[in-house]
Length: 219
Ligand SMILES: [Fe+2]
Figure (cartoon, rainbow, N blue to C red):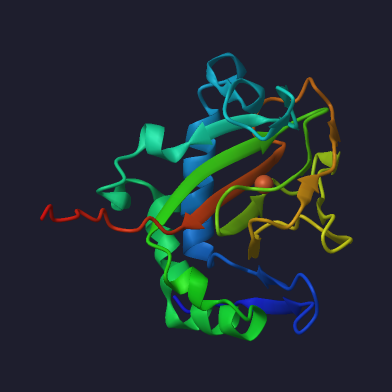
């Protein structure tokens, strides 16, 4: 199935460029992603990790983010990505079509192409959840948002402090940016009596490069 991407090249040629792509997943992929997201949250609130209890960005030990979190490496075998729809569709980010968009956006797009590692997680935000402004410790951060329609929550939009811009967290919208940009998520407001699954999902993939081990020969 062909991609029907709608790219927006933001701040190109200015400080802090970033790329938005709407309709990131095609219909087939979107349905498959939904099945996986619903599988993740099907374990319920009591059996889901909270960001506050993981390695979420923090200041002086105080976590900046509140949401449920699902680390895909804990669940799926990374050596065999086909067991996860989210992971197997990451090959879209390695297509020439996507790389061409990156090269139109970032002067250092080659740094994305030369990454050799990725790490993915799903965050799920419900009432009062938030992610205050922070940076990520990787080279590129790639986010895609999902929610059920009609939308049952208010807030939850993504923002860059650098640059000072809001990005509406639309369903099936991807945004990619260098991980050092300061960014966050506005607090969510929704009926706490709703069952799990009506909030805001974020699929996050961090990209980075790990150099091969160098063994020095002893003389
Ligand atoms: Fe982040």
